[in-house]
Amino acid sequence: MKPSGRLKLVSGVRDLQIVDCDDIHCGIVDDIELEGKPGGALRVKALLVGPGGYRDRLPRWWMALVRLVAGEEVVRIPWSEVESISSVVRLASPGSKLGLCRGEDKARRLLPRSRAGR
Image (cartoon, rainbow, N blue to C red; front, side, top):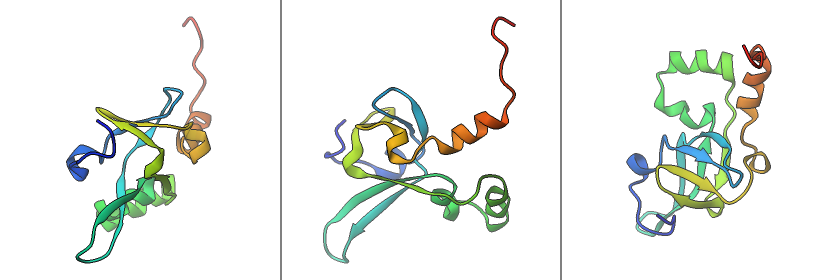
């Protein structure tokens, strides 16, 4: 499906895995930023990724815990960067260029390195 067609935003896009042009998994769509005026056309402006993107979806006490562990960062992926949407959101650019993968990279540094062959 091309992103220019009709979409069910909440059920069709939110919580989908994001894959960049290099087939690297870069996170999950946490929310969607819209633009428009009352009575006018409503358009998707950006996909929001990161703990700040799902702040309004969690109870306040749970978000306080998330904030301590992961922070409140939110990355805005311009809608123009979305190449296609199917079972994943495919991006036209590398995730690192868009500011994605920072949380995953940080988590990898905290995890012990695996030992090859064991």
